[in-house]
View 1 (tube, helix red, strand yellow):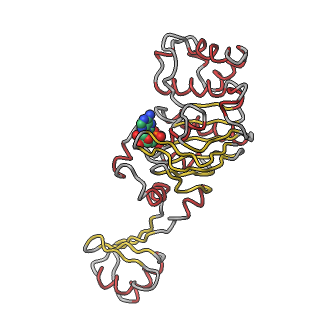
View 2 (spheres, protein in one colour):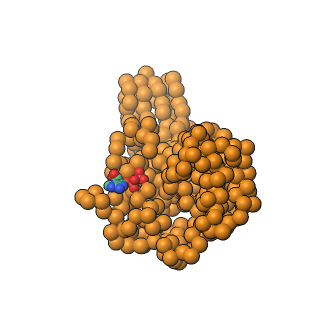
View 3 (tube, helix red, strand yellow):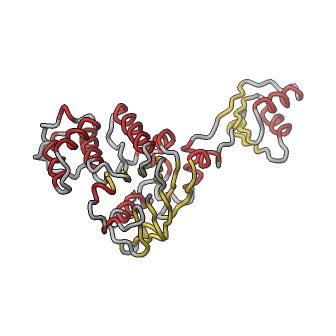
Amino acid sequence: MIEVHHLTKRYGSTLAVDDVSFTVHPGRVTGFLGPNGAGKSTTIRSIVGLDRPTSGFATINGESFEDAAAPLHELGVLLDAGNRHPGRTARAHLRALAATHGIGDRRVDEVMELTGIDSVAGRRAGSFSLGMGQRLAIAGALLGDPQTLILDEPINGLDPDGVIWVRNLLKHLAAEGRTVFLSSHLMSEMAVTADHLIVIGRGRILADAPLQDVLARVEQSTVVVRTPEATALAHRLAGPGVTVTSTAADRLEVRGLEAADVAVSAMAGGIVLHELTTTTASLEDAYLAITHDALDYAASSLETAGR
Ligand code: ADP
């Protein structure tokens, strides 16, 4: 279990994390979601003792991580996949890491097999693609067979196979009863990986709820209707709880009614319809609704923003 208590972190005049509190429970995948610059990495670095909070504190299984006698067994961390000696082979890199905790070569072989890098164990880590480097970093995080895993943007740079592999691995580790906490700015990935979401924007927690609840917040469908008599139809549809927006001369977007209601109303008025479709909110919509006031960047830059 990871517990964060009133964590605040300032960098000069930047308030990166603002009085953040949350608990990450074992047995499920918890996603830490927010736009770039929201404070995810700062929170994670503070949890693992790499950043000193301005105030507040975090514990892993009830203890400060800095006090852990054998940290690799307590917590597996993926922070910066590029953090390895480029001249060392993948195997040598993992063996060096393992040696700091008296972990044997057999476990090194095991994690290399688990992460699919056993066939390149003898290759220098410097020659690894981003995706292979990510797998190597995950192998390092798993070395101590930790009860808790924290991964900062673990799917960055992975090919589609790799993304599915990480997703399945994290679900599997959570199903074993481990605490799995991963950050991402990719809503689509969270939608299929996380069971629970903690959403952060401008250093503040905006939501801390099961994935389904976050989706339900905005899961109101929109009926799109095209008709040459848009104005007449809009008048017929108007009523309590109904919002009708005209998006073109012959196009309306209707919230608060089902497609069937719109069809019946049009027929009663003798209005011909050229199109009648329903769209449902996605996690992207939920996320944008939640982070609306907290975005550091315009929504359009979210799509392309890397880290
Ligand atoms: P995220 O991981 O969600 O992208 P970060 O935690 O990296 O967000 O950053 C949160 C805020 O803190 C941003 O405004 C960022 O510019 C700032 N920040 C992060 N690290 C530093 C640092 N070492 N020095 C100064 N500002 C920082």
